[in-house]
Amino acid sequence: MQAVYKRLIIWGAVVALLALGLFAAFRPRAVPVDSIVLQPGPMQVTVDEEGETRVHDVFAVSAPVAGHLHRIEVHVGDEVKAGETVLARIEPADPSLLDPRSEAQARATVQAAESALALAEAEIEQAQAEYEFALAEHQRARNLVSGGTISVRDAESAERAFRSSRAALATSQAALQVRRFELERARAQLLSPAATSATRADCACVSVMAPVSGEVLYIPNESERVVEAGEPLLQIGDPTDLEIVVDFLSTDAVRIAPGQRVLVERWGGDVNLVGRVRRVEPFGFTKVSALGIEEQRVNVIIDLTSPREMWQALGHGYQLEARVVLWQSEDVVSVPLTAIFRDGAQWAVFVLEGGRARLRNLEIGQRNGIAAEVVSGLQAGDRVILHPSNRVQHGTRVTSE
Image 1 (tube, rainbow, N blue to C red):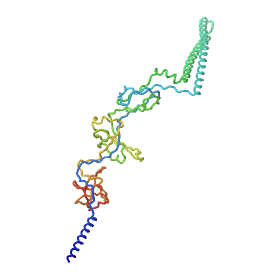
Image 2 (cartoon, rainbow, N blue to C red):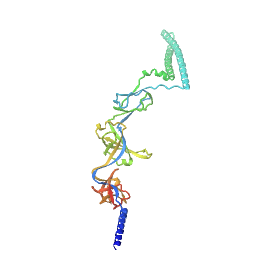
Image 3 (cartoon, rainbow, N blue to C red):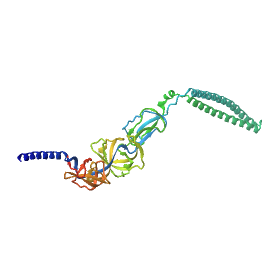
Image 4 (tube, helix red, strand yellow):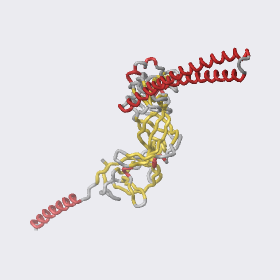
């Protein structure tokens, strides 16, 4: 009997150890999770986009006339005064070179003008002779009519002939002046750039004056060249009068209103700047993104409200990042977006209670890219599970690492 009991005890211990081993091997283990305790704190909802600074009023100065532009002596950053600073000088452009046919036509025109001048000079000689003869006849008739030798009619005829010859001489002299001017005009057609360059120093230039006071912002080309009327020469403006322009997606722009607070970041300074939305432009435009996607964008104009001393290093066309504050609260319970998920038509989270995950539905309010405002379902002090995997279900044993 003692041997039987001993065998039973030994085999019972073996079976018990085997059962314990199987239970330990197949017992569900606690799922390791990350968790966080909810605490009230500040929260903001913003729309973020990159933008750039620009001078509020940029004045583009263009050439008032076509001509030869001297090299622009002012430089970007130079201060200018309205009506005093000379921005550029323009003088008449050199004549263009003539092709062989045009040159031959111009020389023929000169020869024709010279011949017309010679003809006019000959006509003056003829008119001068007629005038001298008529003058002598007129004087002789006046002497004879006083003595009764000729009739009054003959004397009047001599006077009329005298006046006609005098008028004909004046006409010939005027025609001679016309032929001389025509010859000068014909010779001007043969002027070459080499002939006019010698007289350039004596030419009166057109000075382009600064329309407003400020600084030179941009000069597309400083070199001496020939310009057309209306061609842009440079841009000037007041760099202390800066504004920010940001092109937001139209779906974000409809949520922005004038007066909203703006946080300006990544502009190069040590501290963030503060601004305020001045205007949301009423029209949108199409812009192709870096991925080649067409997007509808809307420009939002922002004024800087931070002191000038904080952002005086900024200039025209500087890049920055603007965050328009749509909503903010200093004391709100929020839950990370990585903790919430959809449970049918409701939002839900897993709450860590007593070492197990408990499914809890909640209602959320405002959301940003990091967290969501808790309206109901959670309260401060609750520990929620972050990044719940498919291994976490309601009632699952979990352990927070």
